[in-house]
Length: 147
Image (tube, rainbow, N blue to C red; front, top):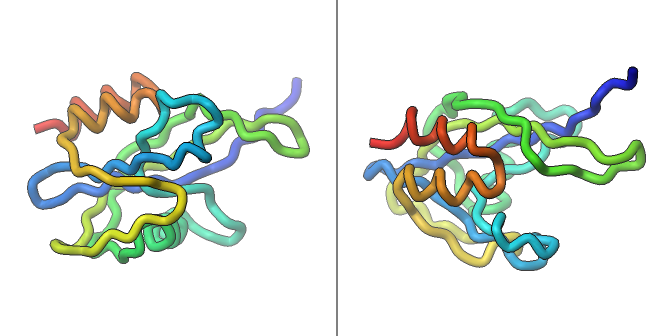
């Protein structure tokens, strides 16, 4: 029996004072023909030597140009449907999700990975993100984060 190998990523569910969540629209170059997975939240895979919170801070700075002002709160981990090609074959992606906030009036400067952003309620965020992650993840957003 062979062992499964996974990549680990860290994502930020950024909530504003109104309770809305920040969603990013992926640049078409990032999509590989799958337009249903165009919405995402900031984050990415861990670099060697990083812990979860260091990865989260780096990715948010890279993708949004901002520094968050809250202690990230662990929300959930999920095994995604994303397969990453490696020299050892395809591996699955496991994501650690954290809740956090950014300062009011923070100026978001998107990286080239995204074309736009929107602040949406938890129900809309869950509907968009279930296309990329899973029904289970979306259900957790609805039961734990929807007002």
